[in-house]
Length: 519
Image (cartoon, rainbow, N blue to C red):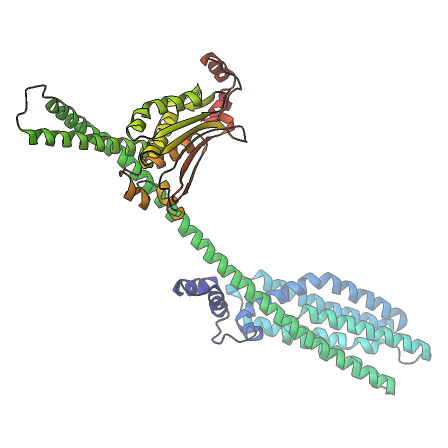
């Protein structure tokens, strides 16, 4: 049945609502044409499950019914004719065991070995014989006794019959025909026993017995519909789970292929970057020699301009190749951290010093705010220096002349350390932040108002910080400016005092596992 539902799902269009798809699954499972059909209409399509449920009920209730028969047979032996009580008990017990054996044989067969129509007929016949055996029970009570005794026996007889009818209806509820066959004979038998010497009370009891039978059959029908509805819902749930499992399998396969493709891309870029740098270095070297006229003067000024263009374009291309190489090495997992015990403030000061000339050329003020007594931290110096330089270079690139860039280094609330670079440039729209954080991504305002770059600076910063186990935060408001924050985790902060590399070497010797975990 799940296969049918699955086929229906695959044929459904993507824009169908969830409710419509669930209705399609249900209709496919019950093989019903109309959508307003009730659970009773679906019964025909769940006959196998209903028969299985009946067999399970009969087997599970077998010990209870067996004990009830033995108790009643012994009781009837004391208050009635012992011989007839023994005969009745032996006969009903044999019918009960026969019904249980039939159900066990049915349960032992594989589904493809069962002829459902034949087995249902057997169940109905067994229940009918079983019900006829119980129909004799009301006649085992003595007919002649004092009035008070007869009233008490009538109450016991009526209560016993109602209990058995309820139990039989519950057991045979999955098969309505079997339920009727097992309960109707005893109801008729109880009514007939009271009509032997009819009185007003006897007639009322007989009608009550038939009324109880009608009520039980109605309740059995409701219970049968509940069985059908539960089967429909269970089959629908199985179909939905199968759909989800197939979707998960497809998603996992797509993710695996995407990861493999991304890895292949990174490896290809890393390989090609290495191959491209070799001839590019020759181009840059020869163009530098020619531009400086080291082998003789160049009389044509146009040639000099061409050489300058070649050299500048080569430098730009070399920078692009280096950035691609850095990013691809990180993505391919080939970028290893060379960790040292360093001061984050010192790295930030060095990076600021390297870009001071560029800041003065654009008339941009670079302010610094370094927290005092910063403890040393375990980082890759080259990577953190590259992070700081990229953030400062981006800020200087997008800050207009006369603007200001603020460089901050401090502690986080969790005990880590951070580097923050804030500018008062044009800013980045909120919906373009994910673009800026992706490789080769640039915001529209940045492209219009500043010199264009490769779009790899921020992704490289983000990748290097993540490689250290930290976080990268980019905040921006259009017309106000942008702030980039590189956060390093607290586990990389070694001590709260300044020390030399011997401390780092001693700690590395004592706690290599912890330091390796930090990396």
